[in-house]
Length: 214
Image 1 (cartoon, helix red, strand yellow):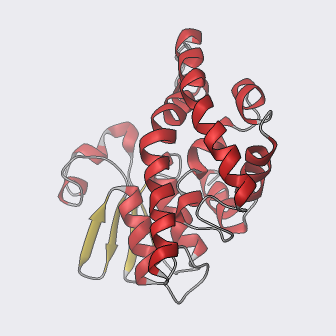
Image 2 (tube, rainbow, N blue to C red; image 1 turned 180 degrees about the vertical axis):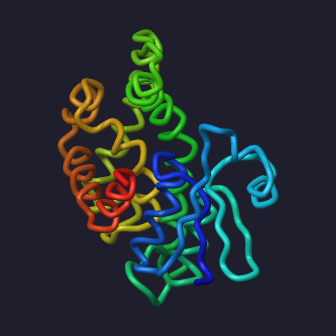
C-alpha cells in the first residue's frame, strides 16, 4: 500500500488530511505517531517533517507535510476518484483557492484557539480561560458574517459543490459544534449553521470521527 498517513486521529491537522483521503475513497495506512511520548519530535518521524508536527504523508516516493498541502495534493493527484475537491475549471478553482486562504488566514486563527480553550484544555486537565474565549469569539464573529453572506449566494464556500474550502474547516467545527460558543456565534447565522451541519454529516468525515474511537 503506497499511501501512508503518519499522525494521530485526535490531532485536528491529521483529521484534515484524513478527511481528504476519505473523501477520495483511497486505500491507505494510518501510521500512528505517539504524540504523548514525543514521537513526533524524534526519528523516524522527524525525517518526514523537520518541524516535528503531524501529519505527514507518503505516497510512493513523495513525502509531504502540512495538512492543507496534503489535502490539496490528494485533491489534485486523485482528481478522478471519489469526491471532486478541486475544480478542473481555472476560474472555479481560483474561487475555491480564495476561500481556502480565508479559512487559513481569517477563520482558523480564532477557530483553532477556541477549540483549544473549550475542548483541548479540559481534555488535558487544564482550565479554560473565559477571557480568551470571549476574545476569540469576538474575532471570529465578523468572519462568520462574511460566511453568512457568501452562503446566501452558494451552497458551499467555494461554490455549489463541496470542496477543499469546506473540508479545511471540519476539525475546528467538529470541536465547536454543540458548545456554548457555537450556540452564541454560529447558530444565530442560519446559513452558517446549516452549512456546518451539512459538512459535518458527510460520510467521509464520520469515518474520520470513528477513527478517533479506536
